[in-house]
Amino acid sequence: MAAGYIGRKSIIMRKIILPFFFLLVCFSLNAQTFRESRIYVPPIAGAGTQSENTFFYRLLTYEVTLQYQSIVRNQAGSDYILLGSVDTYAGFLSRNPADKLAANAVPVPPPQGRQAESHVFNLQLIDSKTGEIIGEQHLIYTEIDTSINGLVSIIVYNLLSCIPDQVETNDWRSNWLYLGASVLWSPRLYISNYQSVNWLNVGLGISAEYHFLNFMSLGLGANFTQDWLVVTVGREYRDLILEVPLSLRFVFKPTDHLMLELYGAFSVNLSMMQVTKVSPFSLSAGFQFGVKAGPGIFTVDPRFSMDLYPSALGNILTYNRYIVHIGIGYKFGLIPKSYRDY
Image 1: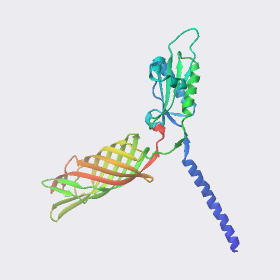
Image 2 (image 1 turned 45 degrees about the vertical axis):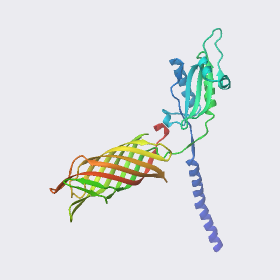
Image 3 (image 1 turned 135 degrees about the vertical axis):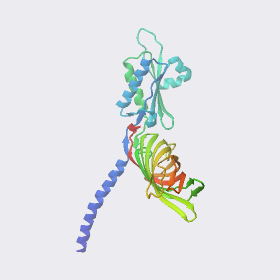
Image 4 (image 1 turned 120 degrees about the horizontal axis):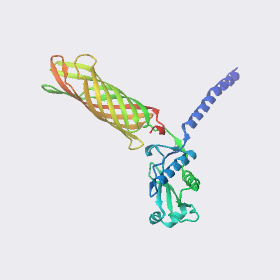
């Protein structure tokens, strides 16, 4: 009886554990997917004519796609830059040693029966992040003809073969949407016939950000804080205020571990307890410091706010508010951007 029970239990455990193990292995493999390299091809510059520059530019973009790499619209979203330029042969020699030209050049024979000035098509592969030149090739020609196509294909292949496999990873700073929550310390100054300060004011906030550009976003939030007015000794009034800020944010990503946001906001204010008649609108300016922490972002968010209209405590008091919010919170990124969205 005991042996049979243990045997059945072992079979059941294998049925449970083995599929889970294979699922875990598949997830691990899928987490490291390979992708095409993102290549940015800027316009061709140098001593060539407009038609020559256009010819080489179109040829480069065609060859990059043909060799299973991806063309991107700007340098910010690229892994590498394929920088082409046209120079006269004499001008190129004056700036480059002859041995370098001999080692990296692909010559094109001049057309029969005529002499023409030689030009050099120079092509560099540059790392977008470091600016390092990974490889360089030169093509010497005297006339644009069909033989150029095959030779450009060769030098593009030579350069792109230097590129290692690219592993697809999601950049925690490049999502369409971010949702967050924070605890607020919100000291505020009330100015009327006299001044009073409420230092012991705390609140809660939630927020959502839509990053419609790589460097700019729109934010919408809801903050619950308290107004605490001391009129005279023994006469205190408290109200719960809902603040709904709409913000425009400039996003900076100076390192792989930081995301900084400088913003201005327009807020709508509502009294939840109807004790005070709070100013309906206010303006804010702030700066959010974000650092990668686990699956999301730890944030510190200081902000200064001032009302556009006076607030009132019935017929007793009219006052202006000046508010400092210091939020400590956490936010998550949702819907990752692909490099084509940059």
